[in-house]
Structure formats: structure tokens, C-alpha cells
Image 1 (tube, rainbow, N blue to C red):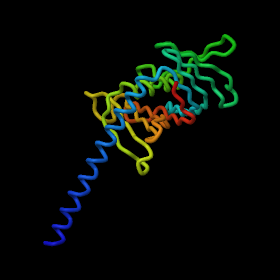
Image 2 (image 1 turned 30 degrees about the horizontal axis):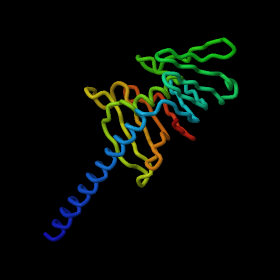
Image 3 (image 1 turned 180 degrees about the horizontal axis):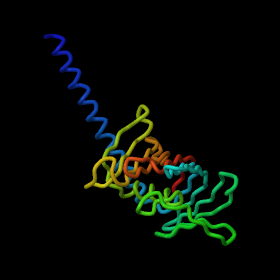
Image 4 (image 1 turned 90 degrees about the vertical axis):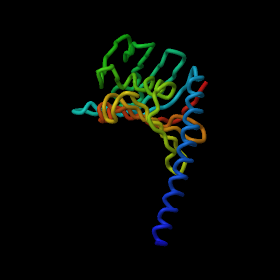
Length: 192
């Protein structure tokens, strides 16, 4: 009987701690969302992995966002170093010396490696939050975004990780029908 009582008390304590952590994560997620809504410009270094199923591409780039315009400058792989992607609104092209190329969509909504950063920033600003939690001993905030009427593992889902102290975006994933299509890892995120 005593063991049963101890187990019940432990469950109550663990549940209470989880609830407090959940509300802390939710408050932090809302604070970060407000900050990202106010950001008009930012710069970041990004390593992007685009998985088309049959083929996987890896890119490294510098990104600068200013209002509705995003400029990405590829630094790796070496064969495409110097290519610039300029995205304004819905249009995005890779261009170099006046030549433009298309990388191809990863989903039915036109997600490409070029549009991944603006899509992740939009999710940070206005994505429907389905879950959030503190990870790595509270160092990272994980925010899951998806369709409010959708089912987990269906459609397009986004997961964002923010540095809990600085609120910098450090990683983002976009999954399509449960398959991770885009992984972005960020360094040197600066706003303003």
C-alpha cells in the first residue's frame, strides 16, 4: 500500500512539473513570436539539406532578409558558390550572371531550398503552434507548427528550435506528409 501511495505522489509531482515547464515553453514561444513579428530585417548563415526522396542536396549560404525581399548567397557546394537567390513575395529564382535556374518544388505548395528560409521565418511569425517544449536542459525551445484542422504526419509541418536565452533561430525542419524535406541549421542570427 505504501509503495502504491509513493508511486501516486511521484506521478502527481512529475505531472505538475511537466505542466509548469509546458506553460513556461508556451510563454516563451509567444514572446519569441512577438519579437519575430517585429523583425523587419535579419541576417544569418544557413546549412540546408533538401531531401527529394531519390536525391539529397546540401547547401550552405548567407541570407539577408529586408522586408519582403530575401537574398541568399550560396557558399557551398563549391560548384555553385556565388549563386544568388533573390526572393520577393512569391517569386524566387537562383541567378548568376543573368542566368536563372529552378531547383524544383519539394511539395505541392512550391517549397524549395530557396524558399525554405522565408517559409521558416513565416512559421515563426504566424504558424499555428501545435506543441512547444524546452529541450536540452532548457537551452532550446522547440515549436511545432502545422495545420490546425490537419492530422499529425499529413500535409506540411514545421518544427523550429530557438535559443531559449537569445531567441535566435538555430534550426528548422519542414516535413511533407511525415517525411522531412528540409533541414536548416543556422548560425550567426542577427535581427535588425
